[in-house]
Length: 407
View (cartoon, rainbow, N blue to C red):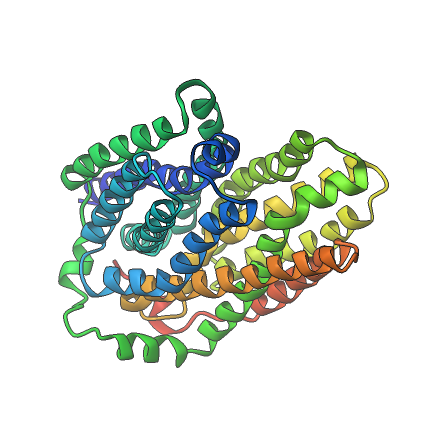
C-alpha cells in the first residue's frame, strides 16, 4: 500500500509539472511579442503594458476564490478546469483582431489561472503529508521557473511564424493535456474520506485562517516578499542598464537569467533541507526560508552598491536561492499552521497580498523615475522587506496536529 501511495504521489507532481510550465509560459510569452503585436494591432506602450496589468490585477483578486473552489470541491477538477479554460483563452488570443479583444482574453486568463497554483500545491501537500512535502513542492515550482524562462520563445515564434502562432499552438497543447489530466490525475484518498469538505463555507474558511496568529505572520511575510520580488522583477533591468551601461538584451538576461537558475537550485536544496530538518525541528518549513532571507537581504544591498557587475550578479544569485527556499516551503509552512481544509484558500490569500503589494511598488518605481530619483531606493526597500520577512517567518510556530499529519 505504501509503495502504491508513493508512486501516485510522485506521479501527481510529474503531471502537474507540465501544467505549471504552461501556467507561466502562456501568461508571459506576450511580453516577448511587443513589436509584431503592436504592428498588427494599434496600441500605445501604455496600452501594451495594460495587457499584463489587467491579467495581474484580476489574477491577484481571484486567487483566494480559486483556492476556495479547490478546498470546497475537488482539487483535481479545479486544476483540470483551470487548465482547460486558460488554454482555450490562450488559443482564442491568437484570433482576436482588436485591443479590446486582447484585454478581454487577458482578463479571462487572469480568472482561469487564478484557480491553478493554490489547488495544485494543496493537492501535492495532500499526497505528500510530511517527509517529502517540501521536495515535492520544490519540484513542482521548477516547472514554473522553466515556464518563466521559456517565455522568450514567444518572440522566436513570432519572428518566424507570426505572433498568433504561439498562442494557437500552446493553447491547443494545453487543451489536449487537460484531457490527459482527466485520466491521470486523482484527488488524494484522505481528502475524500478522512476530511469532510461539504460543510466548508467562505466565512468559515476566512475565520479559520485569520484566527491563527501564525497565518497572520505568513500573510505579512508574503507582503514583504512581494515588495522584493515585484520591485526586482519590474525595475532591475532598468537599474542594471543605467548603472552598468548594459545593452537592453544584456540587462534583461542579467536581471532574470541568474535569478531563475539560482531559484531553480534553491527550491531543490531548500526543499530537501526542510524535509530532512523537519524530522527534528517542527519549525523547519518556515525557518529555512527565514535563514535564506537573512543572508539574501545584505547580499541585495551588495547588488545595489556594487562597483562591478560580477559583484551585483553574486548578490542576485543569493537572492534567487533565498526566493527558491520560500517557494519550496510556503505551502508546507502554511499546512503546518492552519486546518488543511483551508490551505488552498490560504495560499490564494498569500498570493493576493504579494501581487497587490508588489504592484504598488512597481508603480512607486515609475513615480520615482518620473521624479528623477535613483531606483536604488526601490532595491533598498526590497532588501529591507526581505529582512522583515525573515524575522516574521522565523516567528512562525506550527500548531497542534498540523505539525505531523498522520496520513
